[in-house]
Amino acid sequence: MELKDIIAIRGKSDLYRILAKTPKGIVVESLNEKRVKFKVQPDLHVLLLSDITIFSNDNTELYLQDVLLEIFEKDGLDIKLDPKDEPNKLREYFKTVAPNHDEEKVYISDMKKMVKWYKIIGEYYPDVFENLKKEKEEMAKEDKKSEKKEDEKVENKDEKKSQKKESKASDKTSRTKETVEKKKTSKEVKGKTTTKDKTDKNKS
Image (cartoon, rainbow, N blue to C red; front, side):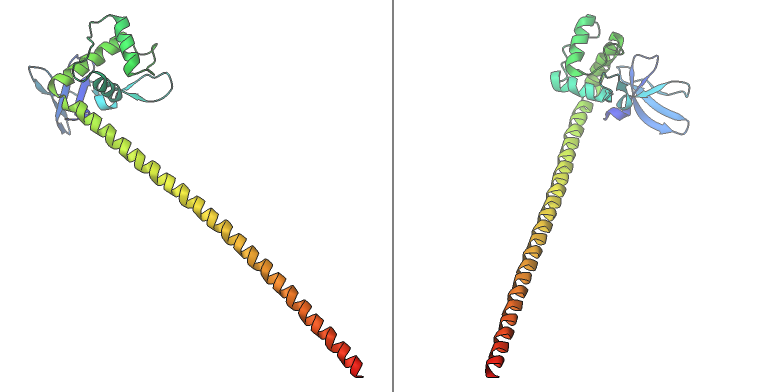
């Protein structure tokens, strides 16, 4: 099971698993002991848990799935928190798992809902959290590969620049040697001509 297969319906406290998608709507099953199945009516406001974002105080996108994963990595399935806990306790806890959440826009009621959702998923589909963890690890590997490729590109670019400089320096040295040789040859020729002229005059 993946988080993208779980939805919330505005006005309802439970979570639901998507069973099927049809042109007329989606069929879901409640994540509770009753396991009630029904077709979601078009007038109901459906929220995909994987798409839900939380207000942040640094203008970055803070996804619900990231917060749920932080809770899982911190406490596992045995979360040390309850929706009925004191507001201060809830707020302090969320500061540890979502330090950049906007304290003015994220209400205590939102936190209670997230804790409740976490417990529901942990009870019925705990593999969702394991899958989130694997996904995060895969993304980290891909990021490392991308960084490595970028570093290699920079190294190749620097190497080409270095080779170009060396080539230019070599060409300059060759031209300098060629110029010196030409001047030397010219002097030798001129010296031979002068000597010949002197010899011819003496003969005369």
